[in-house]
Image (cartoon, rainbow, N blue to C red; front, side, top):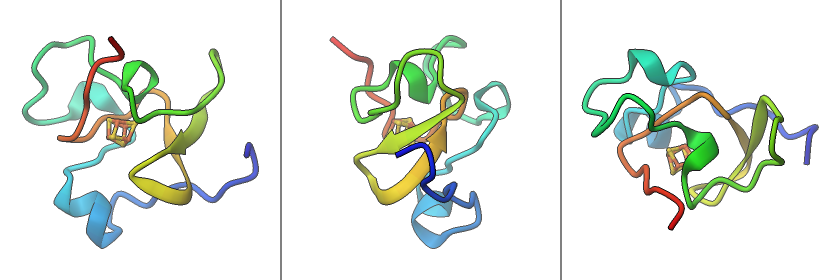
Amino acid sequence: AQDLPHVSPSDPTASALKYVEDGTKAQGRKTPNDFCADCSFYQGKAGAAWGPCQLFPGKAVAAKGWCVSHTHVA
Ligand code: SF4
């Protein structure tokens, strides 16, 4: 999984979801602490810089990224 290609922020789906690789620069975050790494759709290993996201099959998103579908892990 660590070899998955990275999602391009300009990919149509990523763009529609306002995905960014640097969550600190995201528009519309609910809290400043929301990142892919604490999203329930994220499947990366703890501490890894990139990991799979259920919304982007076959690709990896940045652990410090963010998109509008962000949902906190319960
Ligand atoms: Fe990141 Fe979650 Fe959006 Fe996937 S759904 S890109 S893990 S914020």
